[in-house]
Length: 103
Image 1 (cartoon, rainbow, N blue to C red):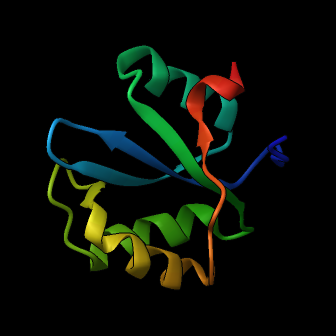
Image 2 (cartoon, rainbow, N blue to C red):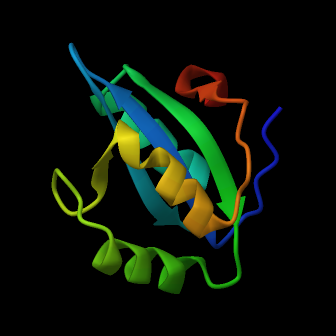
C-alpha cells in the first residue's frame, strides 16, 4: 500500500512507449487526483515513487531548471532516472506501483 501525505508531494512516473520510456518528476498537493488524471490520458504509466518534502514545490521548480528535459520541460529520458533519484537523495527505489493500484 502506498502511504501518501496530503500535501507537498513529489512524484516520479514512467510512461512506456514503443521503443523507450520517459520519466516525469512532478509536484502536487492532490497527488491521488493528479495521478488518476495521468492515467486517464495514458494507461501505459506506472508510479515509480512518491516523496513528501516540505520544500517540494521549490525543489521541483529548481530541479526542472537544472536538468534538461527531452519533452515539454518535465519529461526525461529513462537514462536520467539515476540522476533524478540522486537529486531526490533516494539511494534505491526498487518498488514501482502500477498506476491502476491507485484507483
